[in-house]
Image 1: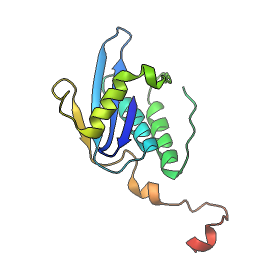
Image 2: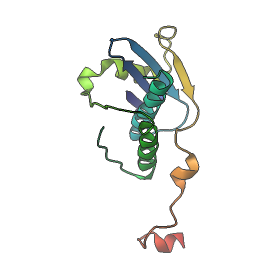
Image 3: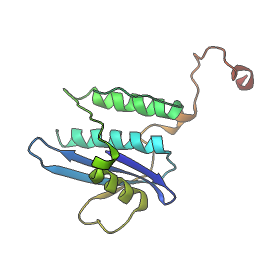
Image 4: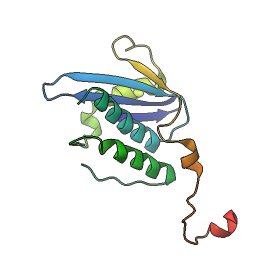
Length: 147
């Protein structure tokens, strides 16, 4: 799975490979503003959802409120599997997913017909969660501003 965010837009690329080496490829254009971190989590979440549809461990850092919400969403999906193995693949060895993510971000037609291109109109995590602050926050520098 990979994500791409650039001047043309944002997209995700997913390449699932079965134990028998069968490949399922999917590119998705994200029709909403998404940061580089957002698209990486969208790729993870969309890949997990695709794996669930097809009946087919990691440690993460979450920086920022939206990223933490993406992480929780991904963890909820991962919990639905009997076993999940997530493997970090260096950029230079992840050409398939990288190409799909770029295809999704630019909505290029060169691979259409070969690779399904989905359009995702909203983030996988609810917008109201992204912009809201929890009531159980302890006193911080923002407390007076929020009051």
